Amino acid sequence: MPLRHALDHHARQRPDALAVSISGTPLTYSALLRRLQRLHAALTALPSRRNADLTLPAESRLFAVAIGNHPAAATLLPAALATPHAVMLLDPHWPAALHQRMLTKLPPDVVFCLSTQTALIDAAQRLNIPAITVDTDAFEAFLADPTDLPLTSPRDTFMVGFTSGTTSEPKAFARARHSWRASLDASRLAFALTDKSHTFSPGPLAHGISLYALAETLDLGAAFHTITRFDLTDAHRAMSATRRIVAVPSLLAALCHGTPQNQVIEITTAGAKLDPALLAKARDFFPRARIHEYYGASELGFVSLNTHGRSSSSAPANSVGHPFPHVALSVRENGSEVAQGQPGTIFVRGDLAIEGYLWGGRHSGFRREGPWATVGDLGKLNFDGSLTLLGREGGMVITAGHNVYPQEIETALSEIPGITTALVLGRTHPSRGQELVAMLQGDTPLEEIRSQLAIRLPRYKLPRRFFRASQWPLTSSGKPDRATLLRWLEEKDARLAPLHPAS
Image: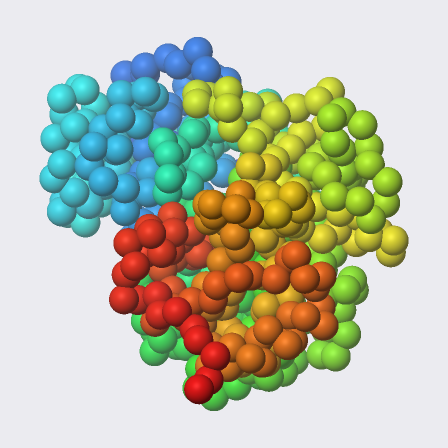
């Protein structure tokens, strides 16, 4: 059932039920539907800039959103899900020059932003794009008299997203409605969701995991809660009204402070591998919750799933689980499938992948081989059918003639008691080609780290240098910022302290 029908159904059957609450600003299902009808009428009245790269009907418009988790997002983001219009998700943390380049490459029909984003407003005006500030009276004035929402086509574009641009220019991709329709049907069963799955997702709505959680929740007729910016007190207040949490591991760790939350029964996490210490901590803080850890990508959708119960997991805990429903996996090298247990590039076949990037994808990890698609992640299929991640193409380290995948070492490090976070990089070495360098957070002594790794890994996979990080930089999507850590390493930044044997 398209989300437009779901929202109409929920608004008729339970008009006063809470649909969305952002930092305490609520919208019921009837109020949300009426605002979507008003926004649809206003967008349709705008002049259209037709774009050949997108599949959009004549009455639809492309609108850009750069407002983060402002309460107006509760209207703007569902509009892309339930009306013929498409949203262009701009990260509000991007620098002004990057915003301008994205608007120039793919000019939307209107930009919704904050009054403080003066550089973005100036850039839109130079390109003759209307800029509506949602934190002023301009947004309410923009909305028109409500009109009925028309039907949407499965093949039409509903979202333009961007890969994270931490080390290079973000690449844009378009998603068609049918891909998320298939995802919603699959995830409802995989995550055991019902109309009582009231969800708290504290992450930025400009990123996939939180935006998808919003779509899931509205499709079910449950209530979606988020906060404008992360604050533990606000997070616990919002979380108290929910039964489910959706968050990347770094935010899940931030939530695990204070009184255990017995009302939470389902947790969904993705974006980075759950390390054993965080899994144990989450099990203690949310004692009734099942923890669904999935591996996926913006370009691929869901790939695999590992569900952790109180004392066991559906797949080995250091894996990323078995293939997601209706998804097939193939591990390949040079166009041919490798033997089970051997490393290779992970390919996915299913209905959830994009067709390609709108620009900048020629030398990217995403590519297709017939019905199969990949983002260049490396892994191996284990003999129980589960998938283990090994890293990303180009991330393999060749040290003293051996091929080493950093993620395998990171997994081994994360299993050592006292280590809370770990990242491994390859650095140029005069005789070995590259040497393995580990950056950690935790208080485990170096001798204990080395002895524990020696049990888990062959000698050639052992890092030669270890550093303890006093801070752990993250990207805006909550993933470890490898580029910043590598810069700190090269600049001998004091935030990375070399570990030495005890004297």
